[in-house]
Length: 59
Image (cartoon, rainbow, N blue to C red):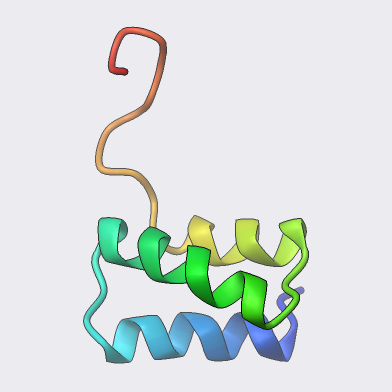
């Protein structure tokens, strides 16, 4: 169950029109300022999945 912070963060990123890349970059700055837990960050990132799977061959 997402917390209020997770829901508000997802809504804000969508309102800004953030794509996958933007969401990850903005969340990196935002999460530290708002003391988000790793679980909360993961829940937000689940809403903005990677465009392609990342594995050792795509780095």
